[in-house]
Image (spheres, one colour):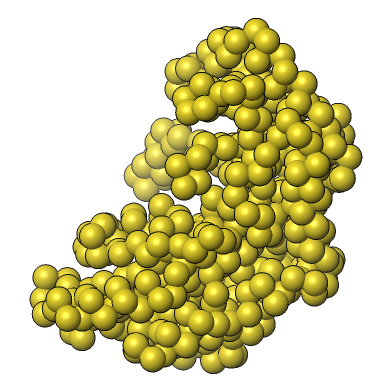
Amino acid sequence: MDAMLKAAGTAGMVAEETLDPVDWADVQALSHRIVDDAVDYLRDVRERPVWQDMPAEVREFFAEPLPQSPQPLAQVYGEVARNVMAYPMGNIHPRFWSWYMGSSNFTGALGDFLAAVQGSNLGGGNHAAALMDSQVVDWCKQMMGFPQSASGTLVSGGSMANIIGLTVARNARAGIDVREHGVAAIDKPLRFYGSDQLHSCHRKAMEALGLGNRALRRIPTDAGLRIDIDALRAAITEDRQAGFRPACVIGTAGTVNTGAIDDLQALARLAAQEDLWFHVDGCIGALIAIAPENSHRVAGIEHAHSIALDPHKWLHAPFEVGCVLIRDASAHRSTFAVTPEFLESTPRGLASGQWLHDFGLQTSRGFRALKVWMALKQHGIEKFGRLIDQNIAQGHCLGALIEAEPLLELVAPLSINIVCFRYPGDGLTGERQKALNTEIMLRLQEDGIAALSDTTVHGQHCLRAAINNHRTRRDDLDLLVRETLRLGLEVSRRGTAG
């Protein structure tokens, strides 16, 4: 009877499946081809357009319905090569200067691949990837001049790094146990301070922290677009007298609009005098600390209570990886740590390592450290410092080219590597001038020549080139000026309708 039941059960058993390939040799051959294509892709990036619009058939490809049945991996890769790799954002190209991006590097891409193959969850635990995550954080401390006793964590990018730092600041300066009682129990409304050039992520942080946008007081800036220290001091005094609790001052090491760097030494002194948390948004410029010719620009950053920085910018790690450092490790951990019964530590084994999720909002965390670690090991920190100096020198070179050209003008003072300029046109002002420059920017993009962004600085619209690309050369800057002049003349003659 037992033999009959066993035979019947075997006959009715469904074959077990896996996502591993049936033929590993075929996958290995295709993988070699993909790597060869990737090397060619980066080697020849300068010969391709910076950006190009997608034709209708490519856009339609992304509207296809959910696949129900399998197709060969080689066919899947072919679709990716035709429809994805051919139409990138463009930020790895040497003439991509829009917004503020890093330009990636091949070693980092290999790191991302190996991290995905290993597949570790960096929530923590006793394994090599977790130790490397902590090691990269330690290296970031060394770059910023932070003590070894400080804390930190790798996150998705600058916005999250700032949110983590400001959350610790809120809890440390609230005067109550915010985690237990909530922000409604704070006896005096908290005030945070930053310049009127602050990145928009700080507003999101205030909203997410339950404090509201009005808790963030924007302080006027000086002629160099740096926070006005006297105005800040007056605002703090005024708020105290009005019954608010000044909690934190946010210094900016490189504003997103112009790259202006606040006087971090003066802010550190003021924060100490007023007993404020001193947070530095260094997502653009904190890493200038490793640049031999320009490190003086961020002097004082080492005195911050917390710093947000982005290895996917001037360390050129593939997206995404940000980092936040917190001087007071105890304040950092106590802001986020929770120990449920299923994540209790053990004296040995897998759960005996540190739980890295105790330092941020994510329990599941990707292995972001490997791509940073491999590139730093290959090139050394000194080379990354020289590349930062190189980009700053290129920014000043572009500024000089624009100043020397009568048909172009700088719109904002040049601090580091962000150049704000415009083609003023013949007698144009206001919206007509904005339309002309916007059309120049769009045609530079659509022709694949260069990618710029635009912004408004103290009421003046301008084009904006942020040069933080390790592939950029001086002749790229010459080309940008020539093409801007050509397009400016052409658009002015034909009108701005595009």
